Image (cartoon, rainbow, N blue to C red; front, side):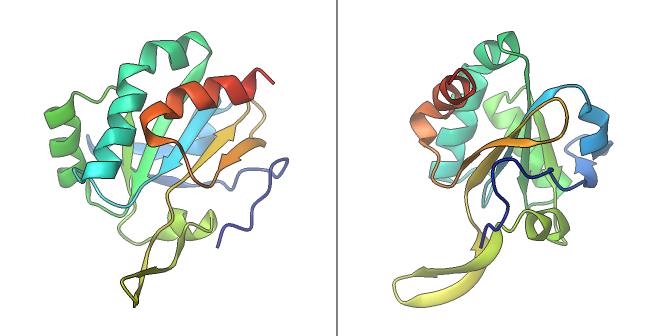
Length: 154
């Protein structure tokens, strides 16, 4: 369950991206960050969300945002996802769920009466000082970039 709130300091993390590079939140100090958590590469809803962010990447960058996606998939699977859909942003592999747990997005889910552990699709918009400015618990996948920019301008 997501227990972080808007106004909280974003938890520090580090991980490995789709290119094998070590990435940490501190690397983005002084920048606005869209940190989005998603269940799995190359699945229908995750692809819709990633492609919306890709298609509106120019808009996000124009508004000063860096985009980082995090899922429990490994770097190799992220690389295939990036290549297949020409994704221009960082994808962090969190196979140990350490980042997912820090942000409270690794939790029990239920589908057709079956309970299991999985990723709660959630986006955190973090300001230049590392403070969470907005949390999207249910992102509008087909219009996610637009809702991010609109929320920042409020």
